[in-house]
Image (cartoon, rainbow, N blue to C red):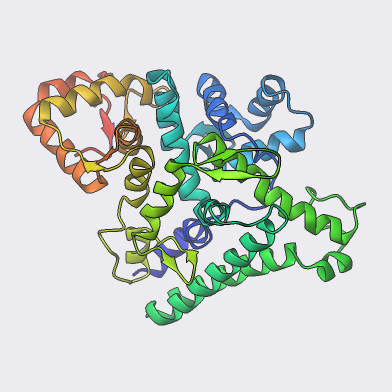
Length: 390
């Protein structure tokens, strides 16, 4: 494990240690972020100001701060990237654009957005879903979720001390966890709210400390509950009662059955490559867990998918026009993988990333002329048909 490489991955490490999007505006309406990607795709590369103006007009958003919050959430969900001073769709953003062009039923869009939510906000969203599957009253949900999030951080602290052998790597992990705990504890501590009249521009300084804490609980629960409803995991019976659907039950069961349920809390594992960065043995079973779980949420039983080279190539050729990067006639492997995974998930099927890459390499060997046909040659070198493809 290289200290330099871990330092370069620190933002990603922070995100995986606490899969929770922080207190920000714009969390409401998960399908809005599909629309934001569409706005950006038409004008990319775009400045923050340009995209913000479109969001304010098209989404009827009042105030630049709230519009900036929408952009922050889109970035936190991994759907847009900042390249210098400009905004571009991310690999997952291109994939989301593609599924919105391919599937009129919106089921693929649900699958891809659920994947984005699990990767960026799985700690909060899955544990909220588990709480809602019980008998908690609406007044208790915020407190119960916060207790779980703090319990997850405590669990990860013990895990790091027991498993990360490198002292430098362990110190980085523990520091990130400590900072996450500090932010959470500060958000719900009335005493700290009384000392500090406000902690961010998103809070209302004129409200009492008690009301600002209550607002934090509400802001944490309400948008995610809306996400779970829109993604088909819960149904709303009235203003206070929510019922978990069969899809929601299957999603929970997939994570609880994958050794992610510890001390009555769902604790998501770090990615395999991040475990390698920390010098900890990973589990191949955990690789691709999110797409397998999403497939199970849509249908049961699930099955892994394999294609012949000809079938695979036809799928890639159909997807390719929608995931091409702006200006360049090339697409990332990650974008293509996410579109294929969304297609498979709504059928109750999945393909793990290593299998996907292996099969893709066979396509290149079996059909070099068709792969070449995806390219648009300009000058001597031309363009790589699929970035990351070998």
